[in-house]
Amino acid sequence: MIGYTTIGVSDMDSACAFYGALFAEMGASQLFGMDRIKFYGTSTDAPMIAICVPYNEETPHSGNGNMIAISGGDRAGVDRLYAKAIELGASDEGGPGERMPIFYGAYVRDADGNKLCFYEMKM
Image (cartoon, rainbow, N blue to C red; front, side, top):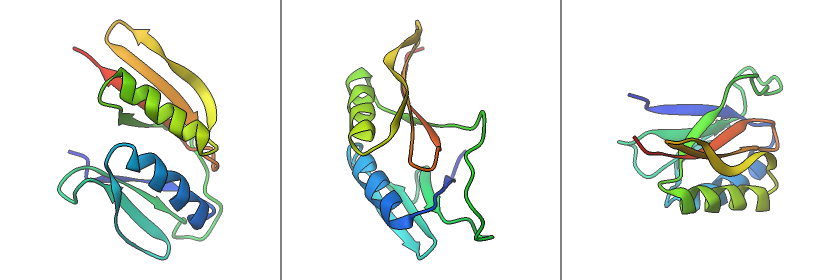
């Protein structure tokens, strides 16, 4: 259902370094892009995440209540993505742990304040 979602950033070079290294942990890479937007994923046929300098050239703003949830695959994957994000300079918003019997997650914010969740969900 989702083709891609975008994350507003203020420094494209820093954001590319952060997201490039983070997504490499999942086997994803930059698939294509241009000066103000870069698309990351495993295939253009699968959901992607894009980082972009806002089109209107105004300061990007993270939303209160907005978050992008990224599957870690399993608990070890969640732990690995969380640790990598922190290593890359993200701030902690809630370390890895079980939130509900079916949900294991970890939360960070990137340098622009965008909130990310790494999760495993078992139904």
